[in-house]
Length: 302
Image (cartoon, rainbow, N blue to C red; front, side, top):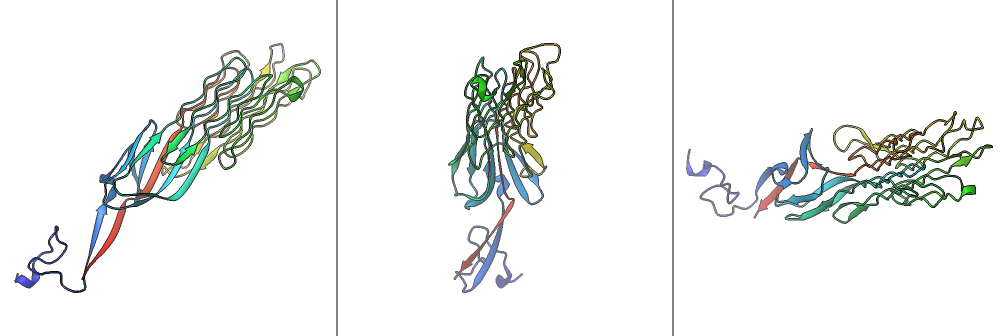
């Protein structure tokens, strides 16, 4: 080949032997996935997905600013005898800028533990400046925890007050009720998609049941549609020949309640679900980041 047909120089982005010819355009296609690190990386079509189930860093070393989608789910709240724990906060967004050479902090919130009167709230999950709040703990005869979603509690006549959710992250827990024989049934914890259900006293006496946890929300950011942030189910207070129906956990990792002490199902790990009444702990949270796998930059040299 002659001098005028030499290969482009990878270093200078121009034909070798030519000094910045007017109007020369060259296109660089870079695989960003090899230059962005953090979490468990998978590929979904033309997108890269980084899934964080433990705290770490999302690092951009591509030479470009990158626009990402994110899902940030906090840890779910723990139960108490007998209210279900609230789900961790759920936040989704797109178009979030991660500048070149950024080292973004990612924190995964833990689930709340059970408690004798109020379950512990879950802890927050964080992606850079975005914070999802931990779910509120369930309660018995007291104020349930507020958070991303609120915990369920027993009825107001016995002193129970539901936990509140944070708008845009989750919903409140359900309230309990008492039947004619003074049995008390607790409400379910709130979920990202709906409030925790109230307890039922029908049929009385001692034939009602705890409220189911509120459903979470589905997301396909990982490449597979998955529910996150479901509330824990509520249970009944006391024991007897007709203990009633136990509240089921909400879609998104919420734990089911139990009629036996310590038998409540914990929220699913890395789904942010609330714990089921009578012993269920909250599930840990998750952070998922998604962006276009290939970024094209046009460089004009004049």
